[in-house]
Amino acid sequence: MSSSCKVIIIGAGTGGLCLAQGLQASGIPVEVFERERTPTDRQGGYKLTISPTGNRALKECLPESVFQKLVQASARASRGVSFLDEHLKPLLTVDFPNTNLGSIDCARPLSRIALREVLLQGLDDIVHFSKKFVGFDDAPDGRVTARFEDGTTATGDLLVGADGANSYVRARLLPYTQRVETGVIAVSGKIALNEQVRAVAPRAIFCGPTLMLGPRGCFLFANAMEYENTNASIPGSCVELNRCGAQSGDREECVMWGFSARREKFGPGLNRDAVDTEALKTTVLALMKDWDPGLRWIVQNSSPISSFSVKTAVPVPAWQTRNVTLLGDALHNMTPFRGMGANIALRDAAALRRALVRVVRGESSLLESLAAYEREMIEYGFRAVRSSLANMRLVHSEGIRRELTKFGFRLMNLFPPLKDKFTNW
Image (tube, rainbow, N blue to C red):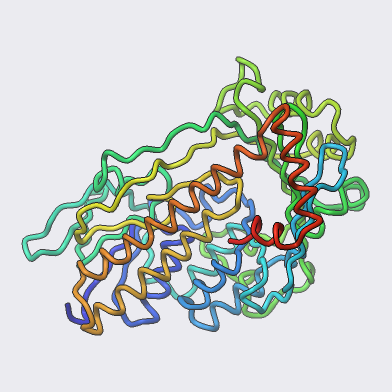
């Protein structure tokens, strides 16, 4: 394949945009097609944490100027992870050794809106919104053509499905793949930071992700988003960007939380697509009846509230490689209970960029490079799926298993080697 090969990416999410940045920086023609109408559609303002794994991928793919904008857009680095019980008694504390936002070894909190704004930098002529993918066909010259709902098409040497957990590309490439219900329902919300919230909220959540194991298999995650400078505009950072007319930068300081439990705990009346926020609050607060009053106050005063049914991908073996492939949640969608999904998607993007660079350099054929990428991605991707699922089961354990889980956390807290093994990404 010559250096003029073209890549078509379906999906302008975290992995797809990281790949697009990496390909453009490597001189490989690329276009991205996204079904959403604007960059902020369905982003929700919630945050994710970029781990060292994700940071390394971003550093590899992004031009240095864009990576620095990512650093500037980041919230204050997490200093550690804390596990507590429902009364805020410590179970396990893991300190992060590096809190320098300029380092790839830090845990970097970012809002999804800010991350997408940064990743769109320099891609104005490459990313096309309002393009709903509906299928692909083999082109007469051996390439592949993507079809869109509006009747338009795009043809390239490679089609990459980066279109998330409900991937249309995966459904057509690997129709036998499955995402299954885990039986867990999650409810999430946020509350803006003010003096009252700072006084009520547990101190641990201002240091980093805080995970609380309650009775009857109930679980609460909380974390604060704080910025070093919330008033001044940072020159060259994402706070100056605005592609869609909305307020840009999303530097709101807040506490974000997620409560989860087995579906049966919520009672028979729960609608998985519920929009009645007060009913959701009432349900969650009933399940948190004997929890710390400060935690209950945060939930009671939070907005917006939303719920979703937690699903996970079923592992698949390697398939017959062709000029259509996948990355991120489009293949190895996982539960949120280890915070790995976005970071594994970024790892995919960096790995696929390297594979395509080898192709344009004449070091291997397209199918050889793709096959190697897919084997590697399937192995580490579904390892993360299994790890995430194991964590979900751990934090929702009940009865004697719950007590053993808490005992195990306390034991790990006493022995650093056990702690390192548990937290190793």
